[in-house]
Length: 153
Image (tube, rainbow, N blue to C red; front, top):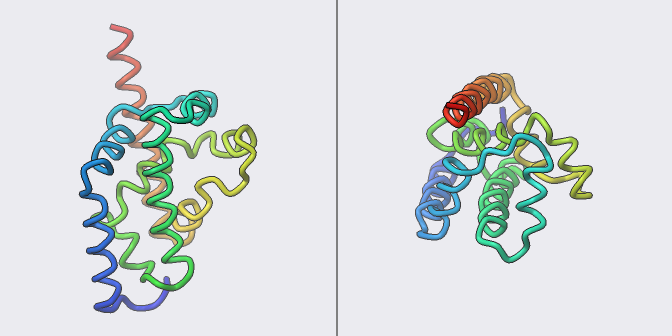
């Protein structure tokens, strides 16, 4: 783990929280969490290729937000131990888990080997984070299955 959390770290966490509450960001986060359930890299590429669409904007907005927040940790500006707490970055793990099974393919198709890289580094950078990612991957797989069964009936 990185440095011990300070009052400055807590202030930055609160600022990040405030940014998540902005109206358009709430819509973008809701889309990611509720509506966006890619099954493979091609599902993502449909959104990536739809430049100017609301979904493309939301994909980039939320992905960019969590990549930026993760970069604060990677550059030492924010305590990793504080950042990876579920109340702070649980959503980041969910976002990554939705694309993680096919992230290598997505990176190849989009031509960006660094897509979601900051997020992935944080989510795999410690034992606690790896356990959280593993748990979140299981939860996302179960949600995918439930959605598939609901559509089939």
